[in-house]
Image (cartoon, rainbow, N blue to C red; front, side, top):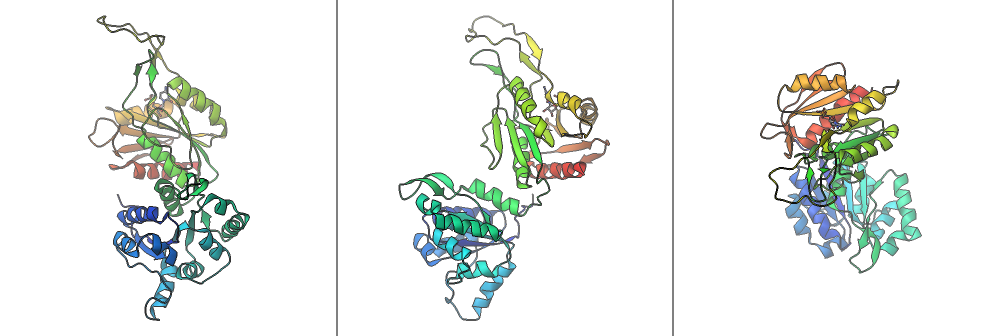
Length: 402
Ligand code: C5P
């Protein structure tokens, strides 16, 4: 899969906070995706971590001073600012933020910020009192007026021993902000509900029936919808995955709970994507005590769960909203089954995936899917990373919205 960041020129400004050590990891991750990262450090930043670390991790020369080399090269520095696709400042200290807000050009980093017209992402990191001070907040407000994106710092224990807001965000949050800046915001103003993972249907306090869904496809859909500007509500059965950044996540266990939460929220949704592997059946009764081992067999009365998607299909109003997307996990007769479900559930799109193939379906990082839309147009996709698969599904949904 060609990374979204491959060959993108990223200018990575670093100012002097203890959080510089975290920026080293970010530079490494960006370089791994194939991005062309050039690091610019303030003097104070080099006191925390040597420029050699960043040169090694980025594979590029690191720039530190305005006058560090022959005069002609200063023009090259300005070219860096002009040519970059994205300008990141992380960590951004109170001092650097104040310089940017007031148009100072007294070091290389602030000069490049003035010279650049690239999209700017600013990741503040500082002591919580410095961060909440009216001066810093006024400076940040000014940066927003200049259309800089500010990624608010986290709350927690700070290196100085204080607790509060000011900690540099984790890489996962930064990664999403960076990817989002290269993604068209074609889901802006859309509220999207995505269901993900398996459901677990208990029959005693210790045991349940479930399936092998990992939730990876649904979480990839949630991340990419968020990147494209949507407001995302992710309703997930039990998985081992962390909540995607910027997404409202509601955890459920059983199909009945998922049904309840979807019904509570779907009225506000423009799009509902049911990628969860909802158990079709559940044990009718849940024993209060753990069923004792001993007998050769146990009797479980199994009853059907409500079909959430079918119910939404029936409720679809005259405006044809919300747009409904279903998943069909099949092991045989894939396309026929997909078409049948598309019609039966009154869907706009069905994503059919093969759960038998080696690299596709439950638990894998890749997926091979076929899409059939409401006009029965079939699109066969190759084996792709689930993230890339998610992008193409959203491309299709955006077309169907029009
Ligand atoms: O009919 P089948 O279970 O194969 O349909 C799969 C699609 O229907 C998926 O999108 C799944 O999330 C949804 N579904 C549902 N409620 C159920 C079972 C499946 O919404 N009880």
